[in-house]
Length: 250
Image (cartoon, rainbow, N blue to C red; front, side, top):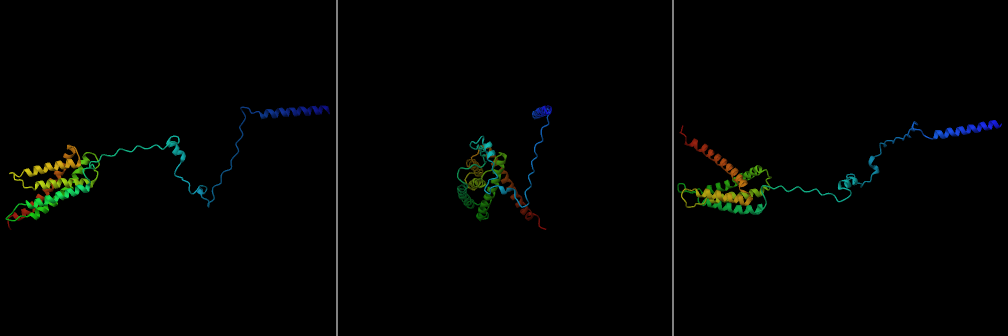
């Protein structure tokens, strides 16, 4: 009986030792598999994904991203504004309406002077035709002058600026030219009016547009080309009308 009790005690001690050894992990033990998580079931067909969000929630802004962009929660960094582009037609010397009113007054004076100084042909003076032609050509060459300003701005690689201001200034320059060119200055040769008119046009363009000599020269050159092209077209038209009438009768 005592032997059996001794054997049972020895057996119990060996089991306790084996259990203690098994509890201490060794470098060669295999890690237990992690418990598998149950997959999340998909939402039911009737449920919506955004039902859990507040209706007033701002989903377009992320506070964490904004704080990172501001550099740690400080005030938002201001983006430096781009410098303003220097336009070719600069403001100043009166607005478009004021310049246009002064130019209209000068143009009216030019039309009157052209009618008064109209040449007399066979005892008759075609003053109405001369006055109407002066008015028409002044308006047409105002448009060609705006085109000259646009080409000069393109050549200077600058934006044009305000178109109405450019038109008003060009109307003033053309009106002054027309007024002086129709003056009957008593100097032999009839070359004084064109020279004085061209000088007045140059001074007006350079003063109103506030340009240096080279950009103002570009405007005057382009405008002169347009003026010559229109004059040549009118001359060819008159030639085509007069030539058949002057031909031999059949």
